[in-house]
Length: 176
Length: 176
Image 1 (cartoon, rainbow over the protein chains, first blue to last red):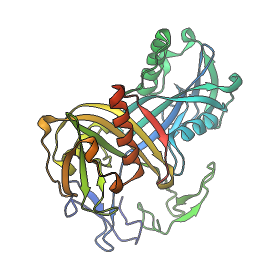
Image 2 (image 1 turned 30 degrees about the vertical axis):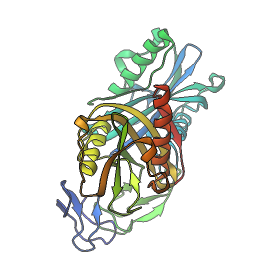
Image 3 (image 1 turned 90 degrees about the vertical axis):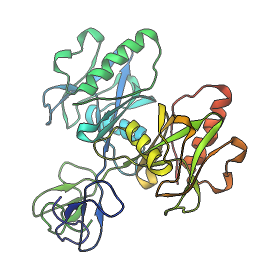
C-alpha cells in the first residue's frame, strides 16, 4: 500500500497511537488502513463413495488438483460461499453442508473453512477456473499432484474419518 | 474507497472482466481492490463456575458487556488471536482453548470464531478497551446489557451446554 484509498495522499507505515503494530496510516486524513486475514471457503463434495476434485486452470498451482474453494465474499455466509465456490469451479450443487475442517495459515494471512457436502445427483462440470472436474474414488485420487497442503490434509482426514463414520470438526495451523 | 492504494489514481466501481461482482478497479494501473469479510476472534473464558466478561470502554456499545474478542491480525492463528484479545481486553491468560462457536454475520461482513478457554489462576484485570472486567456466575450475568447478539447467543449456549457437559462446535448465521 502506497496511497490512502480515502484521500489519495501517500501513506506512512508506522505504529499508530495506542496500537502496538505497524499499520499504513494516512497523515493527511488520519485514516488507519488495517489489513486482516482473508477467509477461504470451500467444500469436500461427496457423491456416494467419491470425492469431487477440480484441476486448476489458473495460477497458483495450475494443473494440480484441488477441492473447490475460494475467497469468501462480502455479504455472504461461509456456508453460502462454500456452495458458491463449488458451483463456480465444479458446476456442482451441494446439500447437507456440515462444517468440517478449519485451517489457519498465518504465513499467508488466510483462514480456511471447509464444509462436507453432498453433490446433488452427482452432477458436476467444468467451471471457468478449472480444466477438468471429476468424482474420484479413494484409489484414484492423484496424491502426487494435489494443489496445497490444506487440500491434502483435508482429503486424508476425510477418508480416515469415513472409515470410522465420525467427522469431528478440527482446527489446526499449517504453513504453506 | 476513492483512490487506488497502489498508484493513487481515482478508482472506478465496476464489474471487472470475468467477474460477476462490482469491485473497486484502478483503470490506471489495472489493480482490482477486493474487499472481503473480516474475522473476529474471541474466547469464552471460564474459571470454575464463572465466565469472564468485559465492560466496553469504547464504541460501539460502550458501557455494555462482552466476551473478549476483536479483529484477527495478519500473521497470527485464530487461537493465538483469541488468546491475544483476552489478554488485551481482560488481562487474562488462557489455556485449554477449544474451538466452540462460529457465527457468520453477513450484514456487516464478519465471521466470528469463539474458543472456550480456561482462565489461568482466575486472574484478570482491566485492559485499555475495558472499563470493568469480572468473572460472573450464571445468575449474575447482566443479560439486559450484553453488547451484541453473538455474545448473548454464545453465553446462553455455553450455559446450556455446560449443564449437559457437551460442547458441540456450532456454526450459524446471525444479523446484527
